[in-house]
Length: 416
Image (cartoon, rainbow, N blue to C red; front, top):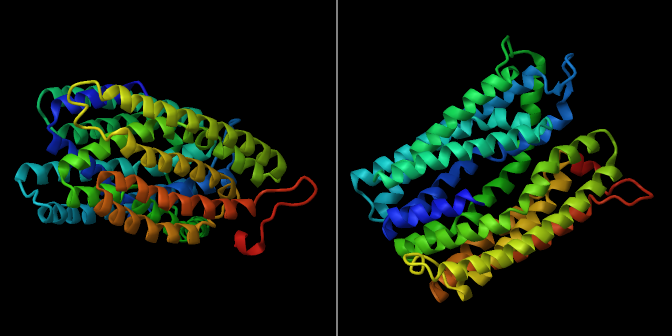
């Protein structure tokens, strides 16, 4: 929250409006990684708490076969993403009139570094799912202390969008060195072609298939507006949406940290059969999430109002009437996504139908409202999508809520 706004100031003062619009477009296009991830990173985090065992040294962690399966899977995801999105992005940029050699080179650098960092998610999610949330949080925080200074120095030296890929590469190197030093067990040795590894790969693949539609929809729901606005309203409007959305998602999205950090505890207690105890933890965490999201909503509106008085920011930001529906959608989205942590503690993915509905509603609503209302319509399109989403997610989550005198409402179909 401290470094992000400083970074935004540097971005606004060093990039032109068109370059800034390209930057947010790049962020949206690399989110296509979800089409290759298909929920694999989240599925690894879901499986890990159910596979932890004693290592003999007083610690717990998944067996080496699962580590191998998880890392191998994410390496393939990264390779597929890099090859496809590099070509796809070049085609989209040509179609949007951005055919310069410099733009194409900046895009390829962005894709390559995104693929590298994505390949590391296998190990990061194993550590996170093992309950070492503190270690992963500290590592990601330290990574920001590497990323931002590198990015700012390069931006101020005139490196333009190359600064973002260079800083991402620095983070990849730093994280890999730290993981290797602190968690050498993440690089297991031996033959992993046996029955155990095959069983784990099959189980992971099954969970990913159940999760794939949900996570693909996340791209269309949360990222589709940027390419639509860039194409229909131009780079300058895309820059306004990107910067305003970043402020809202940062302040409102802070609330997601509560359920994110507590998820391994929920899942571990569910695996041990302490379902009512796990649900009490979830309920308290969810209430904190709602409170923090509401405070973040108010803070985001104050931040937008204040920044309108600062030179250069005033012409790079949406107005208060424009951001109100957008921030309302972000608030609803964070509340809805926090609900999903409870059912996922049971190692299931029951949100396919909700995801399918949002996957259809979101791009159509954003396209329709933006053509009708301009930049204001993007927020209304997102709000329509999340009204559908929160209703569906609440109905699904309700089936998993336990009563204090009977078992939770989980059917055999949900478990299989």
